Structures are given as C-alpha cells and as structure tokens.
Image (cartoon, rainbow, N blue to C red; front, side, top):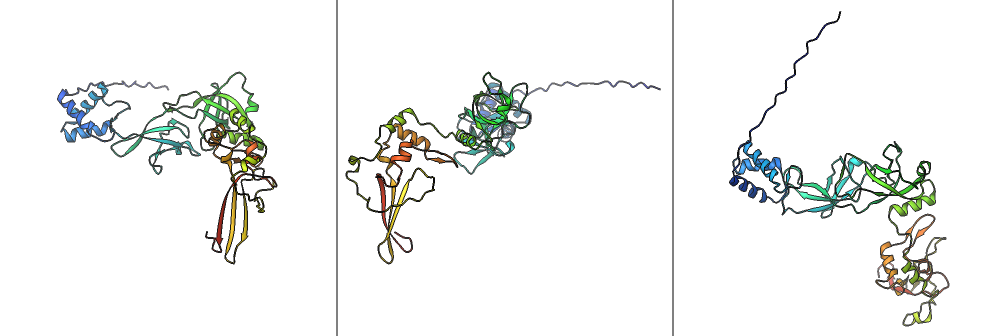
Length: 375
C-alpha cells in the first residue's frame, strides 16, 4: 500500500548586515597604520591591527577594510594590502618528479624555498615575484613574470594523449611533469609518428599570470628525433638543453679564413719546445687533443713537469664572431657517439688540437715538482 509523504516546507532566511559608518578621520588613521608596516598586510591581520591599535570594534574594523578595498587602497592582490616600500624578491621555479613538489627558489637566498600553489600550472624556470608578508607566512609568491622559455621538447603523454581539444603532451624532462594541450595543425606528423618522437612545441600563453586549474596550450614546431634511437636521443638532449649545434655563418667564415697549418710568422717570439717528446693522454677515438705533458727527472727529489695547452687565444680574438659563438657554448659537450664542439672543426680538431707530428701554438706551464707533489 502506497503512503504519501508530506513535503517539507523549505525556508530561506535572508539578512542584511548594517555596516557602521566610518569617518574620513578613521580612514586616514587606518591608512597611516597600514602604510607604517614594512611588509604586505593580509586583510584579516589588518583588521586585528585596527582593533588593537585604533581600538575599533570588530564591526568597525571590518567596515574600514571593506571601505579601503572599495577605494582600491594598496590594491593588487586578493585580500592583501600591497605595501609600496616592501622589499620585492624574485625566485625561479624548481621542478620535481611530481608537480605538487614544485618549489620557488629565492634568487637572493638560494637556501629559501617556497611551496607553490598546487592549483597553478607553471614550468621549471618560470620567474615568480616574491613579497614579504606579515603573519605566519613571511614570504609568499605574489605573481609571475613574463615567461622567458616558451619552447619545450615534448612527447605524447602516455595516458590520454588524445582529446577533443588536441593532443596531450608533456616535456621529456622528467622534472617538468606538466601536461600541455597541443593544437592539431596542418603539416603536423601523424600520431603514430609522434608517439615515437620527441618534438618541439611553443607555448601560446604569455606566462604573465599562472594558469589555474588547467593545462597549458601549445603548438607544434618541429620534430627533433626518435626517442628510441640512440642518435635521436643525442639530438633530443641537444635540443632539451638548448645546445647550439650550428655555428653562425660569420664564425664559420672567420674559421675558414684561418690557415690550415701553423705558419712561420705565428711562431715568432715563442719558445721552441718541439724537441721535447710531449704526449697526450686521450681516448683512442679522440679527435681534439686539448693538452699534452712532458716530465723528466731533474734530481733525486725533483721532476720537471711541462703541461702544454693549445693557445686558442691566438686564433679567437675578443668580440669576434668566433668568440661570441664560443661564449654561447661555454664548453664542448661529449656524447657517446658524437660531440658538440665549442669551436668549428677547423679549430677544435685542427689548429687548436695537439695532434701528433704537427706544429702547434701552445701555452706551457713549466714547473719543478718534488716527491711530495709540491711545486
């Protein structure tokens, strides 16, 4: 037998809270009190200051903060008064294997790390604004600077790589596990090719504000290499760490203008050490020999040690294209099957490599070393 239930009447109580009137004098006193702080003041702490220092009631303190907020006093962030004289710092986002472990490292104090808002979608290397704040959290992340690195080497995500908005990708860098949505575009390789590849993408966001509760948007730029091929891995690593593989046309032109061998003019004013049997200590497949050594016993307790390095400065002059390219590289980078040299091959494997049985210009350290290894 069916029974009827009486419908319960729902009642909604609406109320209006009447805010106390705040005089202009009270507002001015409140402004001076807040401006007298050395760090940003959250609204809830500002109310406490007003109650303790200006002896306002709770209702008056609430009304004062509301009034200041409506006037735009020291505005800039939600529920915080931003002090103009507060010391602003900047920090770099440090990646981790899990996004919730991302932190911001203060540039002024690398020992200080601030946890990131877990709802923000940011990338390692992003620059954040750090501001001091009164209260329990003395430093907080207050904003984000325009993103510098907009290109990333990515792969298709293993989980749910395809959706209606585009392809879900993430950086190959294990410390940047941030999903991005790559828009489908004409000329992009088919999905089965992308599944094996690493490719370069360009972020579409300017990065001036963190993305909240969402994935970053990007577009396909180019394929880098096969992730499962050793040679492809080298190309991917070079792209991932922004290693400049190609030399500028100006640097190559300058290198080609150099002689193939050391000429007599370059030897003038130098000490001739070609009669000493210097040796290099390098791997069997090495092509660039940076240094050579020679050692002979001088007495029972002393050895004469000569260490020669290639005189690169003879060929690479300051502010020249070769110098600019070398500064950008900083060093040669060695992979198991190849090398990204700091200088063009004519220099790195030729004039600045201490190859056997050829003349080379060098800088030499000539030292006496005793049995204790002291000079």
